[in-house]
Length: 156
Image 1 (cartoon, rainbow, N blue to C red):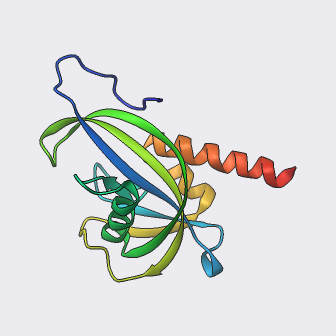
Image 2: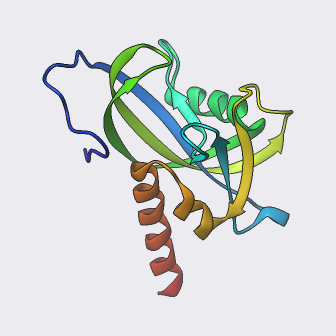
């Protein structure tokens, strides 16, 4: 599995931290747009909505929960696009983690209310701009690869 970000450190006691993240494409009036979560972390970060899979929780259940918490939207997972790993310090949890980030292609549902997490804002951007602005290299890589393959299929 491809790694993005910092390399493994022999002095860090890593714990496995699986996560599920959503590449959410709009439909109807939002066709051609992607839903991201904007956060004020280190300036403004644009992220695929998603997060950690809690003990006893399935990845798809975590995905729908996290999307709602970060954007206020419901979501329909369509298929898994891929995964990448990161080795990093997680200050919110005070732990070193080997994050295994699974990316799913999703269709946006309806908004259910405002985001539960106060530091997240839902942002709809044109797909190409959304991909360019993704702050996490692994997310950008997997979504770009999917969109390029889709463009090749459409052109054939």
